[in-house]
Amino acid sequence: MSFQPVKFYQTGTFTVGNRLLEIDERTVQATQGRDNSLNSGHRACQGCGEALGARYTIDAAMAASGRKLIAANATGCLEVFSTPYPETSWQMPWIHSLFGNAPAVASGVAAAMRIKGKSDVRVVAQGGDGSTTDIGFGCLSGMFERNDDVLYICYDNEAYMNTGVQRSSATPPAVRTATTMPVGTEPGNVFGQGKYVPGIAMAHGIPYVATATVADLHDLEYKIRKAIQIRGAKYIHIFVPCPLGWGAASHDTIKLARMAKECGLFPVFEAEYGEVTGVSKIRRQIPVEEYMKPQRRYAHLFGKNPATETIARIQARADRNIRKYGLLDTEGVN
Image (cartoon, rainbow, N blue to C red):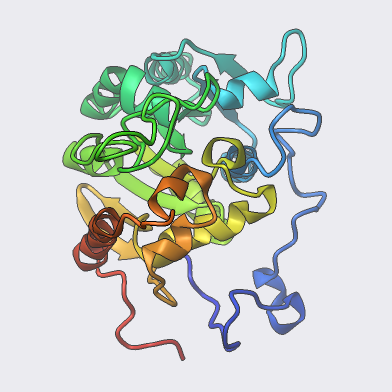
């Protein structure tokens, strides 16, 4: 199941001091053991969830692979802010692919390593929700269908942030973007569109699928380490808030990622061969409004005349996730 070894005893807080934990459970962000594969000097926005997610993801993959790792990176925010020509923040073998073919490039790299007898070299592919759910979806499905030995990582900030905050097929309903403006009788992104790629990946029956957020880095690193040790196609979908595109405060990135899970809009789980094997339970369920109000992309729903019906439909989506994945801990917290 998801990495949740620590029992929390505080009331009204999600934190626990390092001094209360065993040494191997303590969170140490700066250590000589880290590779810093995504090094300082990149040009991500302040509070960028994707930069944080990528740093911890790739460092965990480097450690799990014995530093024998190659990454293919689709065009997008992560590629743009980390490699402004002729500079790079990547301290590892790293390939920039086109917007839509990162899974195919990574599959080719994995095949080349196999032919060269370097089966110990592991391969990851990275992309945002635009390159994953839209432009590169065909290549991704092909990678899953062939069960290529690649770990694909989607950093989901729920829109095309690099090109001006346009809607992607991962953009939630009612959200304001540059292409789904808050106008008309049903403002924002329409209901009934989009796709949920973790579920589609599970439908391919691949060895491992997981979701994670930057609000729980221990869980994220655990899932990366586990995936690197599995042969065949793997998919991890990471929730990474974008302060600029969401109209949120840069210091709220972690808070929003946590709230997305705690309200049920983003279920955190892992699955093997199409079956859910573990979920990260909601510790304190919150209404979706609590998650939505700090974001200007939802501001049109909370004016003088709140869009109560629309908010209720979003709450219903969260409630369905809670029922489907069994996200509420009915036994409570010890």
